[in-house]
Structures are given as structure tokens and as C-alpha cells.
Image 1 (cartoon, helix red, strand yellow):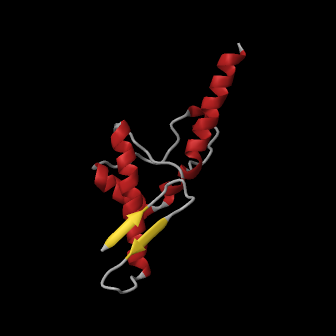
Image 2 (cartoon, rainbow, N blue to C red):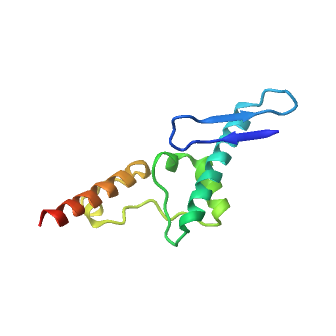
Length: 118
């Protein structure tokens, strides 16, 4: 029996694995974690829909095991890892999936602040 639960908030990540009373190998535990995380991401994405030119950012973006499983579940290939905003490409700022979401949130906040400033 394999049971996996993942809270993507990172506060409580549990993967409980049992097979014939034996302790599983580290690789099997990690694979189960990746599969559980990818499954949860798919559930969330099914709610909002999947569009072309999709990329992934945040903590799981650098986890190849999770990313590849998400691609298989959604039957998509994530687009290349490159900035889509001239503010960054013009300054030759290296792209990093892990900070891409935060950078875009900062640009959004800046635009919102400017809107209400006037």
C-alpha cells in the first residue's frame, strides 16, 4: 500500500509508504514524494486550466522529478526558461525559475502602486 499526502505550503509534508512491511529505498520514497507533489499541482491546475507557453516557477521549478511528472500528467512541455519581460532581458539578468514568480509579483505590485498613486 502506498499513501502520500503533500501540503504544498511546506509546513507539513508527509509521505507514508508501506509495502509488505519493508522499509523502502530512499529513491522510492523520493519518487513517491515527486509523484504526490505533481499530482497535487495537476489538481490545482485542472481548476484554472492550462494554456500554451506555460512555465513553472517557485520552489518545485528546480526539482526535475516533479517538473517531468507534471509535464507527463498535463501532457505539456514547459516553455524555455527565459524572461518574458524586457525589464530583465535588457539588463541581462539571468533567469531563475525560483525567483521568477517573486520578480513578477514585484512588477505587478509596482504597477498597482503607480495606478493608485495617480
